[in-house]
Length: 194
Image (cartoon, rainbow, N blue to C red; front, side, top):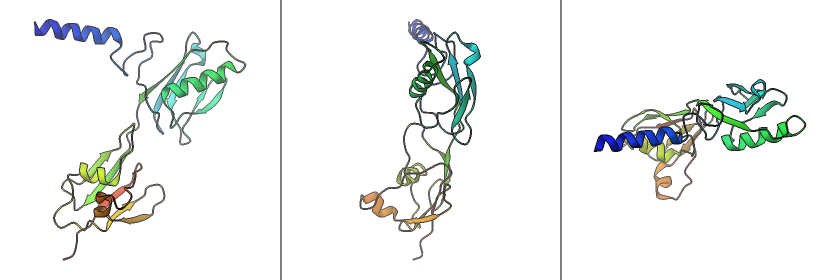
């Protein structure tokens, strides 16, 4: 009986498209929907207009070049919002009723590093659809060790190259603002001197 139930469940998943990944039934486009990040590989399919479809990795500026309408900035947009924007550009003098599908073919993995006096130092992947903070990433690293100096946690920003000293104890108590991390940031928990 369990085997029959599993088979029916799998059949239903295949027929319904299996969620956000897989192929779009209308366009046959593989990939996932969601937030588009810098350097992601994206496909843009224009229904019944194969010459206007394109795909590729977004450049440093977060843009992808599309025939007729030029470079479109997609970084930071949802796939749905990107579809709407591209359809509007095609309607502006090129196509009457464009149907555009945008899919993410490959996500660029973005990471932060945690070093020093934590239980499990290492490299951690930033979530795709939400922010990650210093307190959260230290929690992901198993928390601090007994000899950690929680008042002098260092955050080196990959974007600016600056190092900021943070008081982890105050952040955990809600007395200081927790800091949102960006790709490439490095959090170092130093050893305390007793």
